[in-house]
Image (cartoon, helix red, strand yellow):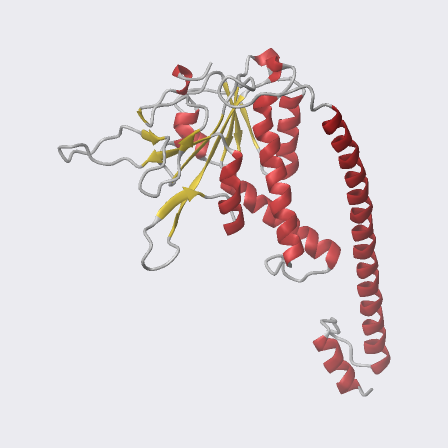
Length: 315
């Protein structure tokens, strides 16, 4: 190949030959780049193989659990009202920015705030303990602290997870950087479907881990868990009415994740009273209404609550 052909080849394959003019130098740079690319591919293959082995181990463990499950069916469990013991609630508040989600969450009994939203906690009118976090590992450390019962000595009875929409951004950033550093991707925004699925599964596992703080054993380790996130207006087609639902991140997140929560409350934006005067009363909707997603599976709250004080409803 001529020097011109080598330069064209390097350009097509993203090989940096800045400052190189001699044929031998360009050939050496291309060889080094191809060798590095092969090493990256080998590393990816090794990681995929490790994931396959891990999946195989998990499948074997699931088979063992399935055998245990069937052998224990004679010990009946009971669910629904009056069935499974539900001592604590998981609640999702959602609304547009500034509607009062975090303010209302702060009325829960003896709260601790996991501040993912960098400024949401400014609206809480009293001093409460908490921790600002900026990475997934920091969130995991806080959850582990609760799981181990370390909150008991501080008298904490509620965990506020403030700003779930920011968690999705963390996954995009951290998984995107992983794709760049490990798989040689040039742009974390151009993430393949495998990376997107990794985010979806990991995000869902973390949410389940948070929700399960309400059902820990021993029972005294349990806490109420209150989540906040933004809202999203959805219009499926030109003729369909708008629907309002919680916003977690991607479209698939927004469609699937609401099923994880027992109680979903929509914080109605501040508006006018019957006389047309501005009112600052905060109303929370706990039942489906005109396309607004809301529910209370635990039957704790009325359909609509004005100036909600969570400590009046949660033990």
